[in-house]
Length: 312
Ligand SMILES: Nc1nc2c(c(=O)[nH]1)N[C@H]1C(S)=C(S)[C@@H](COP(=O)(O)O)O[C@H]1N2
Ligand SMILES: [Mo]
Image 1 (cartoon, rainbow, N blue to C red):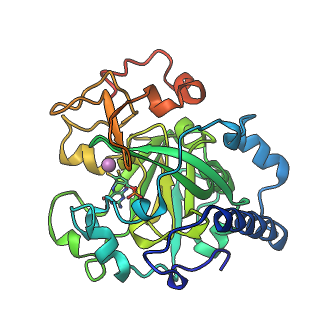
Image 2 (tube, helix red, strand yellow):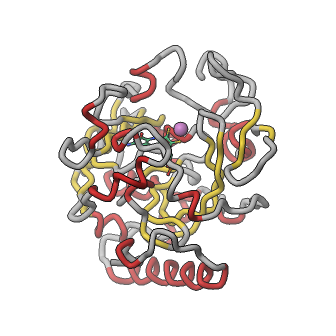
């Protein structure tokens, strides 16, 4: 494995800053080794093209990272229960090896990828991203991952592919929560093609320099930092390129409250509460929620001319 396995970790482990930096280097090193070790890689220039001139790590984030212990113990993962502490308690049953992700639909080279192949697709990078939940709390998380665009390019999307649909694991043996019909299982999410190709949209495989723990969506999950947290589907098993806008789990459950776009927008209230402020986990006073979660400079142009109150 490229990154340290969760089995090596005590759940209570708190990462001191120095070790954290060492681990980051380790991960970077692992990423470049992966790059050297495979013949089916995105070349340097293809990656530069995927990043579209933006270097995501250069986007200054002054915010302090949320302590690791909170990131791994305060979670939403309804397949393991609806309380914040349920995923950390019950997701240990998730078997994350072997793992394959099928990529299919409107593309020239549909195929399945093992998790090992996915790790070799592009160098792993660390991205410090804000994450805001629709419920009004937020975190700042140092993710390890690679651009979703690197995977999509590998299967060669066809011109008719307008959307990307994501489905996640639904296994009643491993996931006690799916006996409750709170959401339609498997959990599904979706992005418009241009959103999916945006360099800020990543597939994350680790956080704080460690391989993802099950509660955070091991072994591979989406992270779309300008959208509410529920867009970031965990434990992905299927990705489909399609012409129609995909049905998404929360919009199916409650179309009046959850739309397809789900951009973080302080001006569009949830029908039952305001979205103007948020509580950063670990802080006492609330802070103002920023348009597109603070990534407006990078993503606002994706929505030029769209009514974001209608397309919420
Ligand atoms: N499969 C799946 N993915 C999911 C969820 C879920 O219940 N099931 N919850 C979402 C929600 S509402 C949020 S806020 C984020 C939380 O991610 P985190 O627990 O890693 O912070 O995961 C998202 N991805
Ligand atoms: Mo959420």
